[in-house]
Image (cartoon, rainbow, N blue to C red; front, side, top):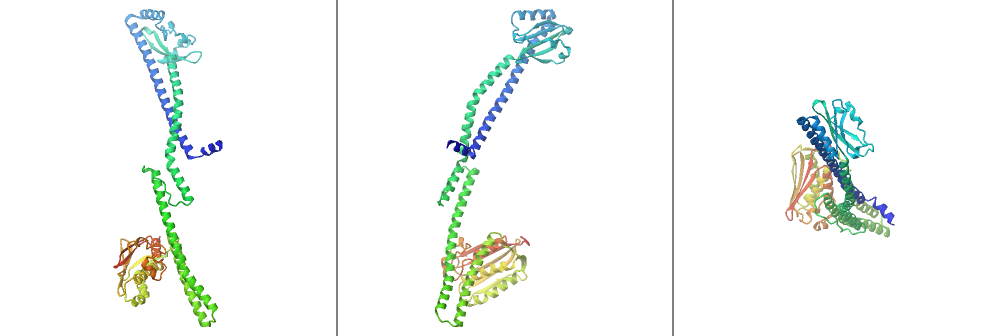
Length: 467
């Protein structure tokens, strides 16, 4: 079980984050140590060279002031007095023959015969390795007066001992550094992934049916907090959509039940009676009418879905809007006259725009039908159209009963019918189709309504020849 859990854990994002955080922390510590080690090494080496230069300058000044013999005596006295225990000194004549040679004990097995080679004296600084290859001695060469050579050097043993202690200390420090790196990585991983764990927990709750579950927000304002807010907003929209879908299904079931029941009742009554051909014909006509009602509802629903999904194909062409609106008004003129409603058309003659002719006719017809249906007897309906800011603007206004403020946000929902409109014949799909077709034209709808005074629906259709 532990191996299985370990195998699963190594595949998680938390494990990868721990590795990333700890690796960055530990790598940074190592790089800082290497930098410090390099700087310390350079500093110690520079100090050694300065000491060698000071000693060389001291000898050079003595030689200039008192001569080469005095310098030779001084070097011998310092050597016998053990004052040159860590210092290499070589004094040579102009032919590079060694006159005096003092060598630190640790470097007595070093081959100094290479110093007899004149070519090696071309460099001011040279380094010689002892036979064991562990330490080296750094030597500075300078020429004195009368061609004498002075070479002063110092071994790297003290420097190497110090750097070795430095490395040992770092090795001990690295143990807590690694532990701190892993602990910091685990802590950062836990803090970073905590919103993701809340998200997973919420999804699991939703999966078991708890649709009210939401991800708690940390209010940090970072990307994960923004993701949580967007996710919660999406859940709210999904919940609202599911609720509306349920209402829509209920409405569809209710609206379909009535015509189906009428068809069934008409058929059963006809079968039970000795009807003549005329009665049978009337029954078939009633059934056909109810079937047409059902087909209209289903076709409208399909048109709305097609438009909302972006699959509706529009035949955009130049259309005479004035003639199109005039034709629609002629169709509804008889219905309006029955209720003594006057239809006023304020459209410039010859107004043309790029739209889908049949879909635009369908949209205006739906708005005009609603305006007459919900208008006041003896009232009026006004239709306006024009081009403004490269948009075709069409408005349909009535002075009827208006729309309640509570119903206004939902009038474009599928199958939504306000309480006052349920007593009137209709599918509750007209405005949904209007909005879907307008959106398919890359346009938008606006509605203003005052209860008891009327409503005005305005369509804005961009003037683009092709979409």
